[in-house]
Length: 118
Image 1 (cartoon, one colour):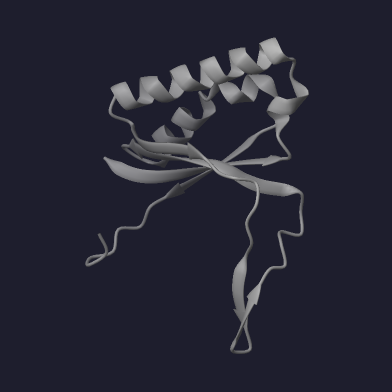
Image 2 (cartoon, one colour):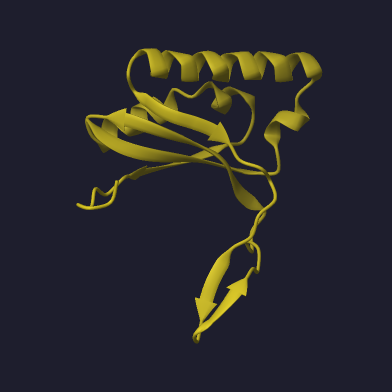
């Protein structure tokens, strides 16, 4: 099995556009999806991310905190999944029920294994 990071991207929080009942249903659906992936041995970790943060960069030998992303899109969470290949990782991502409840984007990236790290 290969490891993949799936970055959950969105503008703002699409869940906030849902009614309270729809929000509860959303949390239950996504929770069941994640639980199923753990039980199937396809999920290593999953967590939401806080909305605050910054970008640390270096330019001409000086570190810069910020600027923040120039778009409204942020990474709001991640999944660390296991799949046989990129196609399976994409299929796992497409099955995420969050797509039923708003505008979401999932970025699927293979994890490069480098000897001596972890």
